Amino acid sequence: MKGLEMKKDKAELKGYSITAKAKEAEVWIYEEIGEYWGMGLSSKQFAKDLKDLGDVSKITVHLNSPGGDPFEGAAIYNTLRSHKAEVIVNIDGLAASAASIIAMAGNEINIAENGMFMIHEAAGMTFGRAEDHEHMAEALRKINGSMMSTYLKRAKIDQEKIAELMAAETWMNADEAVAYGFADQISEPLEMAASFDLSKFKYRNAPALSMSAEDIPSRPKPEEGAPESAKVDNPPPAEPVRATLHDVTLYENDRQKRLAHLRRPKGK
Image 1 (tube, rainbow, N blue to C red):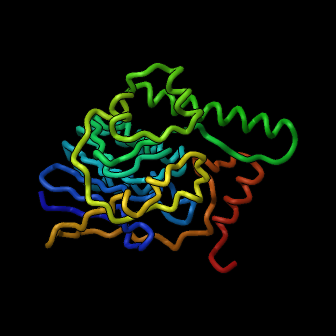
Image 2: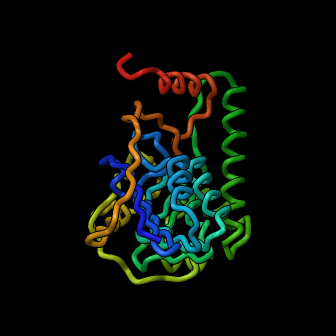
């Protein structure tokens, strides 16, 4: 089987690609999750790219992401879990928020010695009547329950402890991630060369270590001569819709307005 590489030819997705050779796929997700910031990896794009690879028996996912949209993260997780291939997840740097959900898809989960793992509760904003706020609270509880169910499939701790860690927005080093069961083993540290801007995620307890350019790895360059047989080009992104795990807005009227904006032809 000839090597196959698919990636979005867009500067904002330079950290995402899929390659396949000899029925083994390698996925790089060094991006935010979801396109609601005007950039990042969507579950739709990922599912299409993985399907286009054809028959593969092993998928290795290299993960380094500050998180993003919880629903997109769950969809990518489900795409990997439903695939017949063995899935190996390598947390090369950071697996935070929605990215921590994706990490749980691995049959084997490795975390770099200098990597980090973060879980937290969903948060959101509403405006309107008491009923609107009650609907938001109910939605957030459901999101939290869904995330907890995913973690429980892998973790060595019980539901009460996971709830405690989520409520505290817990940032774990490699040793802690393995001890809690969110990873199976620690791998060699990677060379560090890039960082994420975590400020827009409004994380409460993000350590300075995770935001330093010396502490988050960049995506390694592809091998010399690596074949590239397909590129996926999409229309320019619309104005960002901020609906992430820490800034998810489920108020229906606002959601409909944003969807209408996305459907509006460019320049109108």
